[in-house]
Amino acid sequence: MGRPNQVKPARPGTSRRGFFGRSGAAAVALASTPLLPLGTAFAATVNAVFQHGVASGDPLADRVILWTRVSPISARTATSVDYVVATDPALTQVVATGRTKTNVDRDFTVKVDVAGLRAGTTYYYRFAADGATSAIGRTKTLPSGAAPSLRMAVVSCSNYAYGYFNVYRRIAERADLDLVMHLGDYIYEYGSGQYGNVRTCEPEHEIVSLSDYRARHAQYKRDVDSQEMHRQHPLVAIWDDHETANNSWVDGAENHQPGTEGSWPARVAAALQAYYEWMPVRVVDPTTPRRNNRSYAYGNLVDLIMLEERLGARSQQLGTNIGSAAGYFTQTGAYADASRQMLGVTEETWLFDKLRTSTAKWKFLGQGVMFAQLKVAGAPNSAGGGVFLNSDAWDGYQPARNRIFDVLAGTGNKPMVNNVVVLTGDIHSSWAADLTPDPNNAVPANGGYDAASGQGSRAVEFVGTSVSSPGVNDPSGAVANSLRPANPHFKYINLNQRGYMLVDADASRCVCEWWHIDTVASVSNIQTFAVAFEVRDGANHLQPSVQTPNRANPPVPAP
Image (cartoon, rainbow, N blue to C red):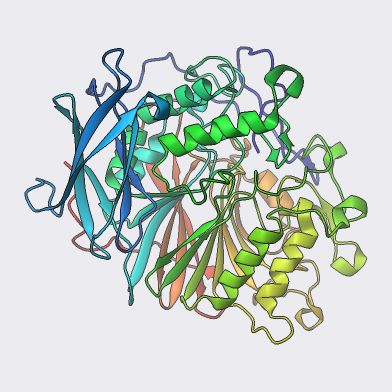
């Protein structure tokens, strides 16, 4: 989600199709980002061989992916790369060394799955090739067994054209994080001027081919703030739509025209090849690249369950002009068709099994689009459920969402599932919600929800804003307030600011803090704590919380 009114041809200025349209009496004004001349970012020392920095990701208890890219300095087709892993930033306490090769077929990217590591341990690493060494990176394995706490940043929607990645820099500065979770739209496919013009895209046209996607990933990886975030923390990522094309589904995308851009399967294959080359992630199934759902055990504290919601099985979105008056919809007709899929039968079965068999205290669902109902007019399900406005989110797939609610509630001889926290990106705004199948029914005994006590809530959702993509221009909060009467399950709505979420969990509670930055139009080091909410063990509903303290004596950052 998040796109201009039109993508072709490229044009000066910026615009965005409003996903809210009109809500009550409030008219939504689209965000307009102030523009600065190109080249206002601070300079970084360029390593000619390792221009794209280093990164790590997909940590497990005994291994982690290390990534870099060797920039070719000649017409060669292959090269060797050495790596070293140590427990100290000076790289004197070495635990692993090795040599690998990369070549033109993988765009000279390097990924090493370093095994035999200790659980819950911070490591430092470096690459060497062609007589040059990379920057030193820092990473961390997941704990095994008893884990006292998890502290992580959650981000999404990093649009290079729309501005600077100040959010990534603020996250890099937090030395006490265990990992960073990226919930999609890591890159955007649009060309220069089509969706933001603070910075120029490479290539300047919309990306379609393998070489296009590679070049766009390369540009993002040269960003100095992105490099620093990757250098300091391991990444757990799932794609959303813009890693391929806007509002994608299994057989196409809103921003894909077969007549001029070729076949959709070919475009997906190109996009995913570049994604797997340029991201510090494992390939779940080499025979089926679109399959990317996977899970991570953070000791006995959290199961991180990452959902693929775009390319594997999603049915085409219904309706057009999402968020405009013409795009409003009710849960009738095709919207009530239980055969329409968000995850597909195979991934649904996998998810249900993960939820029911997990022995972790918390179950985190990392996923792309809003799970909670978002309405412009509220009504109980018995009266039709009201009027909805975003058919690209789970609202457009209510029968599929209801199947998850059934699992959470427990069905037949299956027990209810507690302590589920849904973590969401996509919508360029900040939200906190109780999750209930019938939020406008005030009688919990009849399957409804009491907004005052939280009774009837079966899980909670934390929705993070964007790294740089535009939200709704709502500095007074008038638009957000206009949404509240129809949506009593939302405890926090901020449509206006960009930033990230900080999630801190232990055995007794899970806290989410929203941190906002002041601008993406220029380089800035200003961030502001906005608000915090928490869910207590076994409660399954939100309550206000406070800012959590930084961990004492965190591991030394990478130098």
